[in-house]
Image (tube, rainbow, N blue to C red; front, side):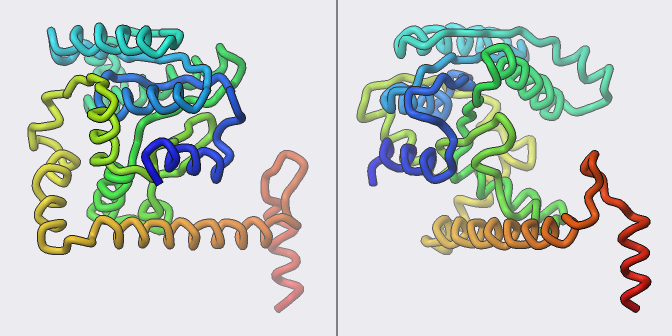
Length: 260
């Protein structure tokens, strides 16, 4: 399967989009998001590109903004952009820069989804991102939810590239002469994800050449296990749900007592 076919199959398998549907595409200007906009356009979806300017990297941030606007125009996509004061948000909420950017970005994406009639928002997470998230959660200490990887569909957020690798994304862009920008901070090993991406995983793949595939298989298996677990829990609690979808604890306790 080539890149476009893999993305199409992922969309159809997970029921992400209807044919020719309007979708918001999170567009940073980097390779992943540019490939996402390109492939969704090729597949016939009506796209609105959404760019966040966090003003954290000086001229590089402005370069990214210009490239995002240019890329949206190239693919005849509508274009939305927003400017954030990350430092003020960090002080107000007491969170890290990474968490502040994540909160601001996803809050805006949900607002855009509502603005355009509750349409999906496509983000460019791919298979490599999923593997990194798996290891980060393992290192932090996690249950099955954390190690089951990213969801292909999570509310209004969809991830059409989740079955494709970073290598496939770069090859697709190269074959089609599509330009992208590179965030220089991704090359600095000052945060855990960058150290995993740039140091740990390349060494792991050198020692275990098939690790990328086997880890992905493990994540898929864990996701299936999580789905089975959730289905079982939902079936068990269904008889005790009240009209407001809360659990009737008193009734549950009474029936448990009667069964002893």
